[in-house]
Length: 557
Ligand code: NOJ
Image (cartoon, rainbow, N blue to C red):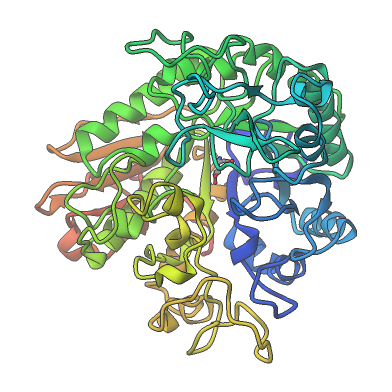
C-alpha cells in the first residue's frame, strides 16, 4: 500500500487536505479566564495530530472588541490579549508544523472594527475628508437626511447603514455596514485599502502560515453610485455581491501567494446561489478553493445530494479547482441537530429557535454524512466539535447570548452561539476540561450539564464513538491513494442509496427508509454504524474494499 507523503511536504496540499476549523474562543482555555486561547490550542496539538487532519484554520485571533466574535478586527498585526501574543501565535504556527499541521488564518477584507484606527480617524474627521474615503459615508435621504442612503440591508438584519453624530451632537452622515454597526465596510476603490490588505497577507505568510481564509469574499466591491438593490438582478449586476472587479483583487493576492517558495493557498468564503458563479473565483490565477455551502445546506435527501455532488464536481473540473466538502462551521446549526429535524436543510432565512429535533436520528445521519464527505473527491473541512458529534445548544439562557445576529434580528434568528459552546475535553462537570480545574471563571458560554459522555476523554476509549469514527475514517483516507483528490464513479444502486467508487474503495450511503444489501466487496473498511446481516441500515454509510481482492494486504488499524 502506498501512503501519501507527510502532509507538510506536499505541493498541491489544498487539493485534498482535511482542514480542521479551530474557533479559538471555544477550543481550549489555558489561562483560566473562561475564553479559549493560543496556549490552550498548543496543549491540544497532539489531539489534532492524532485526529489525522492536515491543516488548521483559525478563526480571527487578532485584536478585536469582539462585537462579532473577532470578525471585527482592530489590528491585524497583533493578537487579542484574551487569546495571547504575537510571539505565541508564531510559536503555535511552528509547533503545528512540527506536528505535520499547516496553518490557515482568517482575513476579513470587507470590513474592520469601528475601533480600527482608520474608522476612528474617519469619524473624527469632517464629511468629505480623505479619512472618510476609506469607508462609505453618505448623507441620508429625505428632507432631514434621516433615511438611510439606500435600501441595502445588513446580513444580520435591519438596514446596512448607521448614522454618525457631528461634533456638535447633531445627526451627521451615514456609514455602510453589511454586518453589525461595529463593522464598517471598507471602500475597495481606495488604494490604501488594497495596499493594506496585501501587506497584511504578507505579514502572515512571512510568519509561516500556509493559507488564508477570505471572509465574505464576494462582498468587498460596491457599485460606486450605491444604487438601491433592485428586483431580479442578473448575476454580476448586484450593487454589492459578486462584482467583476473582485477578480482583479484576488489575482493580485494569488500573485503574492505564488511569490513564496512554499505553497500557499487562498480559500474563499463565498455564499452565492449559483455554483457556476462561485467557481469563477477559482479560475487559474485566482483563488485555490471555496467552501462548498451547497453541500452544507443540502437536505438529507439522496437525489438532491447526488445532484449537488455532480454540480460541484462538474463546475470545479471546468476550472481545475478541487471541490471542498463542508458539513458545518461556526455560523450554522450543528449537523446532529439539523439532520434530526423534519426539514434537514439549512438556511439563515428560515432558521428559528425551538424547532423539534430527534438527536438520535440526527447523530446517525451526521455519522453517515461524515463518511460521505470524507470519501468525495477533493478537500474536506471539519468544524471543531463535529468530530465529537456535539449537537447545537439550543437552550443557552438569553442573558448569555452574544451573537449580534440574535440581537440585530430582534430575536427572530436564534443566533450562532449554539454552535460555539466551548468544547468538552474531560471530566464529569462543566467546564469539562475546557479551562484548567482550578480556574475561577466560567466558560464564556455555558456548557450543557449533560455533556460528560461527549468529552474527548470519554469518546477516545469507545470504538463506537463519533471521535473513533472520525479518527478511523481520517486514517483510512490518508492511507488510501484513491481517496482525496481524483476521479469518482457512481454505481447503480437502489432508490435513495448513494454508491460510488474511488479506485478500489467504494462508499455506500443508505438514505432510504429500509435496509439495503451491500454491494459485493472484499472487506468493510469502516461503517458509520453496525451492519446486521451484511445489510446497510437506513441512515448508515460504509466504505468497502471494492471489487473483492482477496490477496490484498490490508494496513494494520
Ligand atoms: C462570515 C463569518 O464566518 C461570520 O462569522 C461573520 O459574522 C461574517 N462573515 C462577518 O465577518
